[in-house]
Image (cartoon, rainbow, N blue to C red; front, side, top):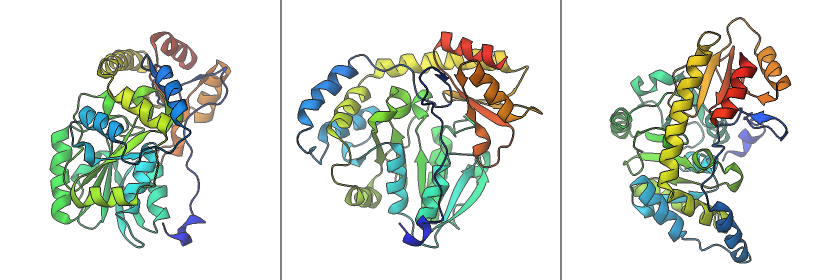
Length: 334
């Protein structure tokens, strides 16, 4: 990290409501959790009087089986955001260039700037058509947040080959890929994949995630990761969740059905962006975004003001939750 850059970088706004009386559609986390998580967490409490085993063998084994990659390729991190920071730390130096999508997750720009590197932005749907050669790093969010579209693995893999030929590291944020039928790029040479357990398993406070890479990139990530970076409860709960494949499949089906239903219902009143993710981006037309979010809040629903994303000025983002909860959102917005 470049010390001179720290004073020039601000915090990034995110979704999430602290008022438990409100129904939160501003954060894209699963409202359901796998059964049995509580007992796993409680069992881990007894082991929390000692340091974690720094090899995280069980977590890595479960993650490797879930992603279909070598367990040693998995670098445990405290959430996907730490995986991203670690990836930028081992790939960028002061003055380096990074290719970033817009609109997309605001932490990319922040983390690139903290390294003293220079971000260059390209439209999110044109990133895979952009020459990676001028940049040390290119970043892809798949599916993209907040727009929701996902790229097939074949297309991303072809771009990874371009990046390798250009000696550019491709960082792929797959925080929402669990909600699609597309396969991960974990283990692809020259690629760092960032994953989070937050979204699919509905446990943002656990702070469990991973970076995945092979070869020299893997070695650098593993050398740079903090000791004991994943708590025992996070590691144990994470390993347990990664083995709940039936839960993942059921969640994916529910989100797909509900997302389609919500999009159809909202289509006449909003510009609904096509999405493969557990959220929808809505254009509000000539209405003020503040009026739309305030009206929803008065009806007990919190939605995300998407104008905080670079390039958006008349949009909100809404998560896909359970059917009855989604009905409340539709009532509030319509």
